[in-house]
Length: 584
View 1: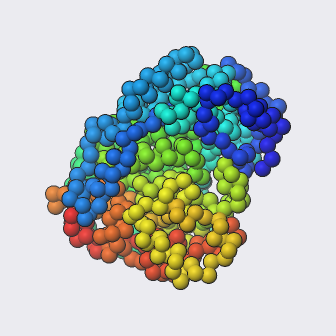
View 2: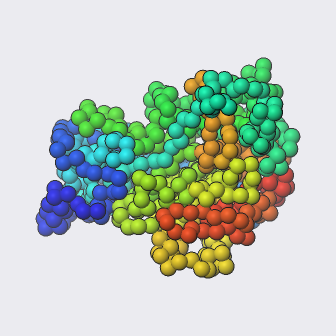
View 3: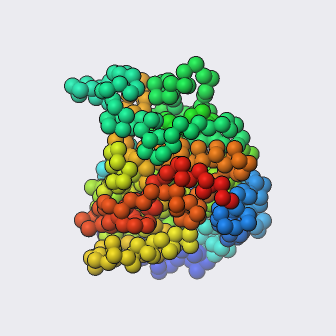
């Protein structure tokens, strides 16, 4: 994409006269697809920008090594999850780094300075003028064409030479987040009238289980759960982290009627906002509990569904910041808990973004080290089919498949979807791909290489072969039912949901049952799941060998034996997994 005259002038000035004492930290080749700079928009130099500065964590390689050991069923340390203090110690930057950043912020009149408990990052409010000076850049106002949302961003930034080795990122400088989210879809009756109440009780002929509705009995049947009921009902031991819950429970889980089951709600960054965007979390919550009841559950909200919608003329506190920060505040909060949730399900996603994605992914590794299974949906855009994305890569504007983050993070379990009530038929629109920023982890290397060199991919076109990173982290890891009539109760009405937004909480509920099974036998929770899935747990998955995933006007990828981008490793068979999770 062609840069505006203002940015061309800025870039040339930077090349010609930038201080030798500054180090370029990040630079985009142009304005990301779908965004335009508003040349006439006024941006006050005194306006406050809230920024997060991420400090270098020199001990992260050690934490990563420990994570892989405690997540590998063949290793003697399997299941020996790290404590809060142990993860904290491995996350702390050097005293020198903390002092340098503190002095830098103070010298630039930063306000509302707030460090995380481990001091691996700090948020602060600085004026636009100060931010431009600190980062050797210029900020502008950009508008997202499809939504009209406006943000304050830059296309590049640098750090003072003495700070560059100690600061990994400054966010949201070059981050143009454009997430995919599910819109509410009120359930219609036979005449197309929206329903304020579901018209018939469960299992009556109008809504036959696994024929016209994906209800708890259907999910139990598809994944061979049977009548298994959890026995360890203790939120300090097994706990799902993910509103409008009671009516769903009463209608779909009759045994909950008359119980005192409640769900906790934690507002991490401010008052709870029941906006339409929270429909996604609503679906997560209700579908995660459909087979896991009565395992305790907490709904966490940071009011941080991206993208940002800050007013360019807003005050010092930058109300748009939290909307740019959907993950790090959440991760940092969970890491402070003595008894965190043991499985977390999230359905939000975005395009990969260099330094920010890397920082968040490290955060998920820390959660895994604490014994938490982190699960994300892969999205519903296939390999990149959204009309607003046009298969244009973030930051480079090259034509490629579009990896989705956090599904592309190697420390999360990525969940794709199957079609209808047939778990052996993957969805052609289920998100899939190969990361450009994260290397292919050792736990999946053999499985992914086997696919890329195998017969299912042998006739790949020359064009398609150039549109993804063959050595990148590949996803999905597993699939679960997504397409179909999932009912959830939302804003006093029954809503129909589907896609990977339905798949991931359903899968998370099954993981919570497996945690319960391990706890009954005196073992720890599963924690980071992927090394188990690609290893000892493979025998407890049902392979999907037919179907394909499409996108970007390319043939896409076909399903075959073993791992493939269409369906990952397949889907859970609970009864087969039960003995396997007890082997170590």
